[in-house]
Length: 309
Image (tube, rainbow, N blue to C red; front, side, top):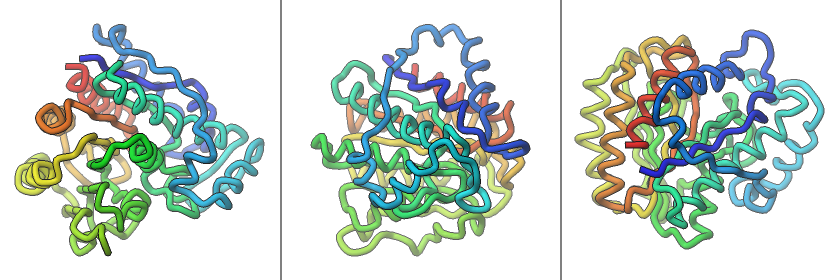
């Protein structure tokens, strides 16, 4: 398949400081792994620019966007988990832009699917504040962009070990964006109970699948078979977006789940099959968490190999 990859060395310049788990070595490890694969040269390198303030304002307030712009050239912390450095603002704008360019290429038929290999990650970022290593909500910005391009029904699946609170809150009242998350619970950020199902017109279009610490491939696979696949088939999306965090891996130091690398291959096989059936194969994946470098690199490669076919 024609698979796009969006990456820039600007993402290495978002410096989170010594000892922070979300650091540039994550991307370096992933790229080193991918370059060993024969299909790497067949991936379509998708160029991209910074996302505009106007597009990002479909998700974040103008006041918050300006506060990120004002960080340019500075260093500090937005919260206890979320540092910024002189190039963090630039990285955040480019991370959003990567998703937009991939989405545009998929809509035009130039690629079938793609991976935004970006940082900072996005799914915790709320409308008015940064959170959990995230500055802008990359996947939410792309979903709003797709809506502006006439895509009526978007399915977002978040398999990061942490609940994607920012993404959920963005679309909690939107019946045209189905948000599904499976995550360790109770755990950071504290949201994501099965009772959170959306509100107003969006009621029934949020599906949370909280899983106990120590859950492994069997529990996740059961969730896919019994809840996620039926939700996809009922919703019939025109586009599938994935918040692809790999921190539910059994080797990850920040969580307590037991997934093997093979699980991410299987999840991707399930979703690509459903995408072909329901929406012409349109899948766009965004890197979120994953903090054991070997496990992260192996899992991203397993995920991308399936996308590439």
